[in-house]
Structures are given as C-alpha cells and as structure tokens.
Length: 124
Image (cartoon, rainbow, N blue to C red; front, top):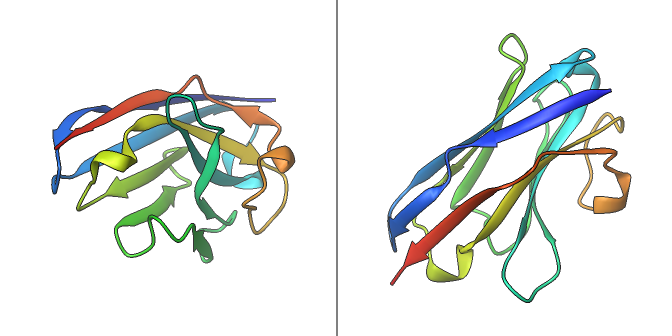
C-alpha cells in the first residue's frame, strides 16, 4: 500500500514554469515506478510521463516531450514533474500514480495507486 499526495499546482501564464511534487508514504517508494497523468475538463485522463524505479529510465508523451521533465528522489520518497514553456492546452488536473512495473508504463490501467490530483491552469 502506498499513499500519494501531489502539490505544486497553480495558475501560471503561458511560457511559464511549474514544478509538481508527489510525496509517497507507506511501503518502500523505490519498489514502484511512477507516472504523471493529466485530465483536462471534458477529456479523458491521459499519460504525461513515467520514470522507472531507479530513475534511470524515463518516457514522455509527445505533447510534453522536450518541455516536461520527470525525476525522483528515492531518499525523499518524492517524484517531481518540472514543466517548462507551459501552454494553455496543458491546463488540467495532474495526477501522480504508482505501478509495480519496474520500468513504468504509459497505460493508466497498470497503476494501482493514485493521488488526489493538483490543478494546473495556464492562462494565455
């Protein structure tokens, strides 16, 4: 069992940056690969980024590639999403999630644990 709590969301102008954090508690954080997903109003939840258990492997969705960076600090039980050059279309609730798959996944169905989400709003 692992509990996830996101923070760092907010309102930012287009072109700006935000860093999301997801703090984990419960079972050993390093046992889980982590992912960030997002859900915009009226749309389905979509994959943004994933990172392996060790942090040595990452994978990004095309819409965020080159602008977002996922990282983790296993000593602090935290995963981050650095978001740069934000666009209005990045506006969404952002969720972190944990999976037992060692390398992570872009498929939401493989994640057994989810945070409550944090709102990111990008104004034009």
